[in-house]
Image 1 (spheres, rainbow, N blue to C red):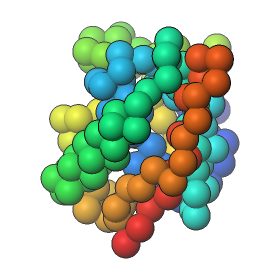
Image 2: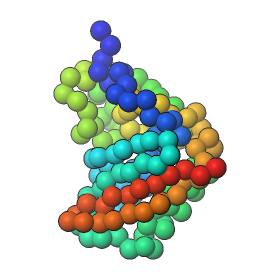
Image 3: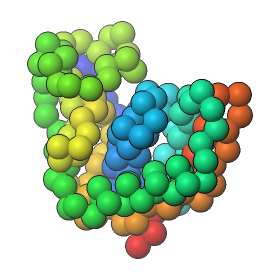
Image 4: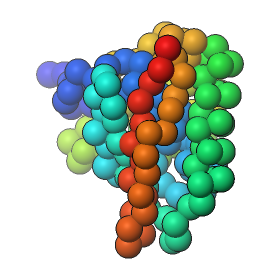
Length: 154
Protein backbone atom coordinates (compact mmCIF):
# COMPACT_ATOMS: atom_id res chain seq x y z
CA UNK A 1 0.00 0.00 0.00
CA UNK A 2 1.32 3.45 -0.94
CA UNK A 3 1.62 5.82 2.06
CA UNK A 4 -0.80 8.78 1.90
CA UNK A 5 2.11 11.24 1.69
CA UNK A 6 3.01 9.92 -1.80
CA UNK A 7 -0.51 10.17 -3.22
CA UNK A 8 -0.93 13.57 -4.89
CA UNK A 9 -4.04 15.46 -3.82
CA UNK A 10 -3.79 17.90 -6.69
CA UNK A 11 -1.72 18.23 -9.83
CA UNK A 12 -0.18 21.60 -9.00
CA UNK A 13 1.59 23.58 -11.71
CA UNK A 14 5.22 22.75 -10.85
CA UNK A 15 6.78 26.25 -11.24
CA UNK A 16 4.05 27.90 -9.15
CA UNK A 17 4.18 25.19 -6.50
CA UNK A 18 7.96 25.56 -6.24
CA UNK A 19 7.55 29.34 -5.91
CA UNK A 20 5.13 28.67 -3.04
CA UNK A 21 7.86 26.75 -1.21
CA UNK A 22 10.26 29.68 -1.56
CA UNK A 23 7.55 32.15 -0.55
CA UNK A 24 6.70 30.12 2.55
CA UNK A 25 10.30 30.00 3.72
CA UNK A 26 10.72 33.71 2.99
CA UNK A 27 7.66 34.53 5.13
CA UNK A 28 8.99 32.35 7.96
CA UNK A 29 12.34 34.12 7.82
CA UNK A 30 11.03 37.68 7.48
CA UNK A 31 8.03 37.54 9.80
CA UNK A 32 8.69 34.55 12.08
CA UNK A 33 5.26 33.17 11.16
CA UNK A 34 4.27 29.63 10.25
CA UNK A 35 4.15 28.44 6.65
CA UNK A 36 0.87 29.08 4.85
CA UNK A 37 -1.99 27.17 6.41
CA UNK A 38 -4.27 27.78 3.44
CA UNK A 39 -3.03 27.90 -0.15
CA UNK A 40 -4.68 27.87 -3.56
CA UNK A 41 -2.05 27.14 -6.22
CA UNK A 42 -2.96 27.53 -9.89
CA UNK A 43 -1.04 28.10 -13.12
CA UNK A 44 -2.08 31.73 -13.69
CA UNK A 45 -2.48 33.04 -10.15
CA UNK A 46 -2.23 31.70 -6.62
CA UNK A 47 -2.79 32.78 -3.05
CA UNK A 48 -1.47 31.92 0.39
CA UNK A 49 -2.71 32.90 3.83
CA UNK A 50 -0.39 33.72 6.73
CA UNK A 51 -1.24 34.69 10.28
CA UNK A 52 0.50 37.84 11.51
CA UNK A 53 -0.14 39.97 14.61
CA UNK A 54 -0.25 43.20 12.58
CA UNK A 55 -0.60 44.33 9.01
CA UNK A 56 2.65 44.36 7.02
CA UNK A 57 3.70 47.52 5.24
CA UNK A 58 4.03 47.92 1.49
CA UNK A 59 7.79 48.12 2.04
CA UNK A 60 7.72 44.71 3.77
CA UNK A 61 5.70 43.19 0.93
CA UNK A 62 8.15 44.65 -1.59
CA UNK A 63 10.95 43.00 0.42
CA UNK A 64 9.13 39.64 0.30
CA UNK A 65 8.90 39.87 -3.49
CA UNK A 66 12.53 40.93 -3.76
CA UNK A 67 13.81 38.10 -1.57
CA UNK A 68 11.72 35.41 -3.29
CA UNK A 69 13.10 36.53 -6.66
CA UNK A 70 16.64 36.62 -5.28
CA UNK A 71 16.32 33.01 -4.12
CA UNK A 72 14.78 31.90 -7.43
CA UNK A 73 17.63 33.56 -9.33
CA UNK A 74 20.21 31.42 -7.50
CA UNK A 75 19.39 28.44 -9.73
CA UNK A 76 18.99 26.15 -6.72
CA UNK A 77 18.36 22.43 -7.29
CA UNK A 78 14.94 21.17 -6.20
CA UNK A 79 15.10 17.60 -4.95
CA UNK A 80 12.90 15.15 -3.08
CA UNK A 81 14.09 12.55 -0.58
CA UNK A 82 12.28 9.75 1.18
CA UNK A 83 13.06 10.03 4.88
CA UNK A 84 11.86 8.34 8.00
CA UNK A 85 9.93 10.55 10.38
CA UNK A 86 12.89 10.33 12.79
CA UNK A 87 15.27 11.56 10.07
CA UNK A 88 12.89 14.35 9.08
CA UNK A 89 12.54 15.52 12.68
CA UNK A 90 16.31 16.16 12.72
CA UNK A 91 16.10 18.76 9.93
CA UNK A 92 16.21 22.23 11.55
CA UNK A 93 13.05 24.24 10.96
CA UNK A 94 11.15 21.43 9.20
CA UNK A 95 7.44 21.87 9.97
CA UNK A 96 5.62 18.56 10.24
CA UNK A 97 2.40 20.04 11.66
CA UNK A 98 0.39 19.75 8.42
CA UNK A 99 0.99 16.03 7.95
CA UNK A 100 -2.15 13.88 7.89
CA UNK A 101 -2.52 11.46 10.82
CA UNK A 102 -2.25 8.39 8.55
CA UNK A 103 1.02 9.46 6.91
CA UNK A 104 3.08 6.59 8.29
CA UNK A 105 6.80 6.60 8.99
CA UNK A 106 8.13 7.41 5.50
CA UNK A 107 7.96 11.03 4.37
CA UNK A 108 8.72 12.70 1.07
CA UNK A 109 10.69 15.86 1.88
CA UNK A 110 11.29 18.42 -0.86
CA UNK A 111 14.44 20.56 -0.66
CA UNK A 112 14.94 23.84 -2.49
CA UNK A 113 18.73 23.95 -2.32
CA UNK A 114 19.75 24.83 1.22
CA UNK A 115 16.95 27.42 1.47
CA UNK A 116 13.88 25.30 2.24
CA UNK A 117 12.83 21.81 3.27
CA UNK A 118 9.20 20.76 3.49
CA UNK A 119 7.25 17.50 3.46
CA UNK A 120 5.31 17.63 0.21
CA UNK A 121 3.51 15.42 -2.29
CA UNK A 122 3.23 17.95 -5.12
CA UNK A 123 5.05 18.42 -8.42
CA UNK A 124 8.10 20.70 -8.53
CA UNK A 125 10.62 21.95 -11.08
CA UNK A 126 14.17 20.56 -11.03
CA UNK A 127 15.82 23.95 -10.56
CA UNK A 128 14.58 27.36 -9.41
CA UNK A 129 15.78 28.80 -12.75
CA UNK A 130 12.67 27.14 -14.28
CA UNK A 131 10.19 29.13 -12.15
CA UNK A 132 10.27 32.59 -13.70
CA UNK A 133 9.84 35.90 -11.91
CA UNK A 134 7.61 36.01 -8.81
CA UNK A 135 5.17 38.93 -8.56
CA UNK A 136 2.84 39.82 -5.68
CA UNK A 137 -0.28 40.98 -7.49
CA UNK A 138 -2.16 42.03 -4.34
CA UNK A 139 -2.41 41.48 -0.61
CA UNK A 140 -4.69 42.32 2.26
CA UNK A 141 -4.60 41.90 6.01
CA UNK A 142 -7.73 41.37 8.05
CA UNK A 143 -8.10 40.23 11.66
CA UNK A 144 -4.65 38.66 11.75
CA UNK A 145 -4.78 36.96 8.34
CA UNK A 146 -2.55 38.14 5.52
CA UNK A 147 -3.80 36.94 2.13
CA UNK A 148 -1.07 37.23 -0.47
CA UNK A 149 -1.96 36.79 -4.16
CA UNK A 150 0.82 36.14 -6.62
CA UNK A 151 1.68 35.11 -10.15
CA UNK A 152 4.73 34.19 -12.18
CA UNK A 153 6.12 36.18 -15.08
CA UNK A 154 8.63 34.96 -17.63
